[in-house]
Image 1 (cartoon, rainbow, N blue to C red):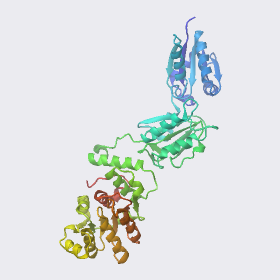
Image 2: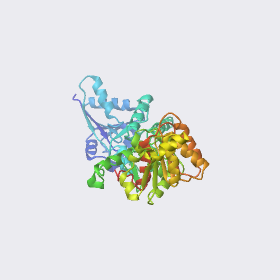
Image 3: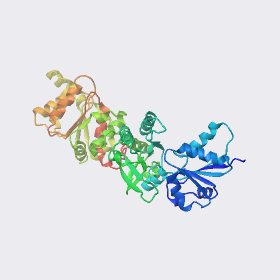
Image 4: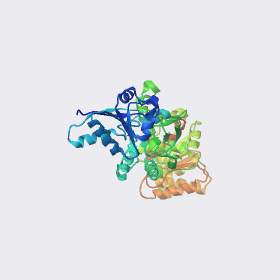
Length: 469
């Protein structure tokens, strides 16, 4: 007897209107339809009367495949149905693998695509999978959990938009909790998340939330969850992952160099561990990480409440003075911004009075420079990026006198007295706004970039840095 044919067909998520004409035609010409009983029920309304139905329960995939081969061996035309797309967690791989493993010529095999549940979910949410994405099933019935966990970590760290199938069931309740934990190691808690239950069916529901806020216990086997990447955002209740159409100057008016900087800033923002940073502090922190490529600064960047916003207001009011401990800090400040706001910058290291005062008092030249500056410009912004002795001198003046400067940026770098100088400054700044890089890290470039961030704070909401570069 001639071998029949097996067609493995995806019937979509359950809405009759989402079944492709190709699949509908294949079913209409079938002798037999084989499938999970819920899927047979979904197409019962348009299944021709002459077609024989063969259904089994959950987890009986091998039995369905064997039935299809047995019917085809009788010369029958068989359609094996899967929900969504038959090649995505469906029957297609099992049918093809059985044929490959048999080592003998079998029936003609055809796979017909269908609309997958994650595609329907994505359409309901907006356009979340418009860039590189992956799909992960949390079911460990076929795949060891340690393999699934490695894939979750890889997807999270590689910034893939990630669709999640089989997130939870009655007995598998903890895996989705672990998924959330792993993703939060690499993604911001504010990352948009969409959850669609019963996608494409009458009782469909849609939830839009965030990675930090979604409740793992609300998901089940009928849920598909989509987690955005670092650039995904919400607008008018739509989840959108940009492809990059607006990166270039002809689209958004930015220069090529500025466009690169914008993308860098947005990448940094998406990789921060916390999403509760105040807007002004976050803006300066992103500048700092951009300058150093060091995400440890998220843990050591410290400010008094509203410090960067206060410095922005005072610096942009016009006529402010900035005092730096070394000329390297001075050279790192954006010249166009200084000119626009009429800001003067002074470094006392080259002042001829400094060596004489240092020798007379037995102090360092940077200490002497700070003493002179505090007398002549008590309202200045003091920016220390190199010398811990300068920061210690300033802290002592704040503690023992009525000195009340605009603010202090304390970012000296090194190993001797560096940590202590920063602790001393924070204790002395009772009312003075400050930004401090805790520990041994810092440097002139870091100190300067914090000032630049303060001068450009109005760009923070639009995440469009680099205007004065």
